[in-house]
Length: 270
Image 1 (spheres, rainbow, N blue to C red):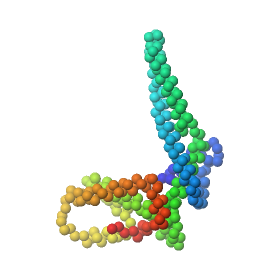
Image 2: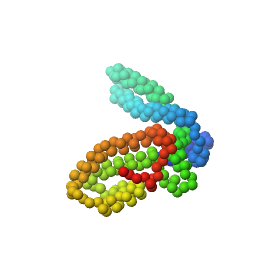
Image 3: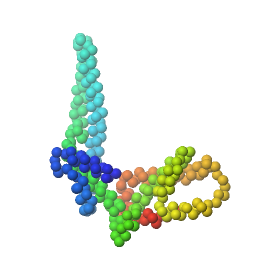
Image 4: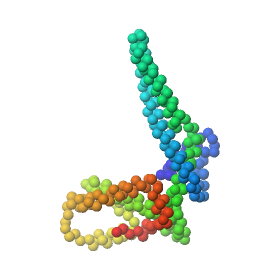
């Protein structure tokens, strides 16, 4: 997601009149190769993001009010065209005129507070700082754990930090919940994709268990579904909270700072 976001910033940067914002891809590559922890950057980036969010909210409101202004102006022009005798419609025209005037004033105020009043270079500068901040946050959360074993680059590539592993299993649980809810229309590809998402050790342990599994009591599809729903009833909310928390980034840093990391291939499920 950061890569997609960065490409959009690069595209907008190339449209700036100021050439210093051109070819930001080179700048981002340099950032990735020369990461240094900057505590002040986090504080500044959070302020910048809050400012941009407020600007975006005002911008959304601005476009809504621009449409309203357009309707008021059309009504005012139509009144002029429909009535020749202005003395008979003077009051209604005056009211419409005041509405147009008031709405115009409101729109001008929103323009000053929104992205409408910002030039592209000004916004790009803020967005570049955010890319820098997010890159450091991701590195702090996942990068340090990977650097603990430089002598095993292949194994390191397959490692997931605890936050990443938690999110991975949350996604698997959510997939299972979706499959259970529409069990009558599950394709073989969907089941295969779910199975392939499991770690290798879990898959290797699952195969012999399935081969030696003895059915003590034949259950109907409805009974099997009911049993699964009992487990999912408490498991799914945990998965949803994990996914939701992941987007906040805060807990990722806390877990990563413990120095823990799980080997994806050697992780065993209870």
